[in-house]
Each structure stands twice: as C-alpha cells, then as structure tokens.
Image (cartoon, rainbow, N blue to C red; front, top):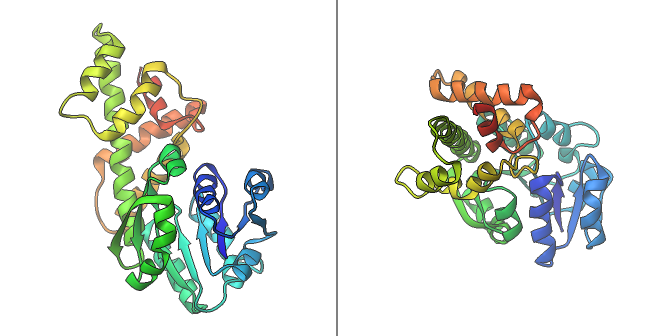
Length: 285
C-alpha cells in the first residue's frame, strides 16, 4: 500500500499517476474535498496522517512549506506515530535542507527511513509523469522507491545524503525565479521602446539567452493569462525566502536573489499571490 499526503495542485496529479498505474493508494489531505476525485477513482481515504502511516509501506508527502510538513509529521495523529519500523517516508515538499535533515533525524528515531525528493516541473509535467526528482538519502532506499518515482517522473537524480535533494531544489527554484523575472523585465522594457510584444517575445525565446522554461511561459505573458497558476507567486516567494534563510545559515550572500525575492513580495502584496508567478510581468509593466 502506498500512502500520499497533500492532495494539492501537484500532489493530486502525482497521486493520480500512481493510482492510474494500478497502485493501491491511501490518502489524506487537510481539505477532504480536494481528495474526493481520487477517492472516486479508488483511493482509500484516511482520517489522519497517522492512519496513512499505519496502512502504508511507503508514504509520500507533498506539502506547501516546512510548517505544513511539521503539522503532518508530528503529534498524536502525526505520520511518525503511524509509520512502523522499516517503512519509507518520501518527502517531495519544497523545504530548506536543514529542515529535511531534521525530519530525517526524527524519522530515524522511529526506525523509519527518509528520503527528501522534491521535484522540478509544474502541473503539465506532473500530469504526464515528466517530473524530475532531486533525491537526498540512502541510495538503497532510493532504489527501492525508484519504480514509484519512475511512474511520476522522467528523471531521478540522487544528489547525496539527506538534505541534498532539497538543496538542489532551492538552487533550481532560485534560478527559475530569476529567469522569469529577467524575462518579464526585458519584455516590459522592449514594449516601452515601442516593440510589438508578440514579436519581441518570439525573438527572445528563439535567441541564445532563452531558458527552456520560457517556451512554456511565453503564452501566459503574451495573453496576460495569469489567473490559472501552474506555479503561484506565493510559492516562488516562499522558495526564495527559504533560499535566503539557508544562505544566511551558511554565511553566503544572495544579492540578486534577495532583490528578485523582494519583487515577488511586492507582486504578492498587490493581491496577486495566487496568480501564476509569470504575473511579475504585469507588475513590471
């Protein structure tokens, strides 16, 4: 039995891939209504994270932030009170590396194995099973989990010990946030000079400076369609804040990232936190 906790934008699609592959699934989400489509397709509902742990051999968590992971992990009804010795917990949440290490330690106290395995990719790759997993933890545990990860992803990268998976995810999202911000500024600047937006974007995306993410995001900026989020402003702002906190703990400066983080913070403060993070273009403009 596979457990899945966190049936949000990403978790629902990842759990759906497992269910479609014929895996027996027991699920929990803070808001039960979000899990009902999976229950209708055959997933078993649990009333608490602890109940998920009691029934599953492998449990995935896909949650919004470190506080949400702690709320699921600890307490009388927490996951760690349900998981039996030797079982495997795979956390795909985007949190800071130091927090992943702390969770791994708490799991070890219960003789539970732990992998941090956050993902690169948003809703479309999640639906297609094309996510990239960055994994930290014991290689033998990863090999046990790999068949499940392969259902949800196209690439599984072992980055080292616990915390290294989440470290890679923060580095990845740091560059992601900067890329979209730089692209948005360039487009808005070009428009201010009188250039046609569609042609401007076509040239930039087809040029040597274009990252693959821009192919995916260009249509949102062309159409200014930001309400339906693949990745929210709230989420990139949170990830950049986690990167800043981790950098501070390691005496490392992030001058570019902190500026970009502040920009996303301003977008959020203007009521656009639930919009797609490409909406930074609208703020720039």
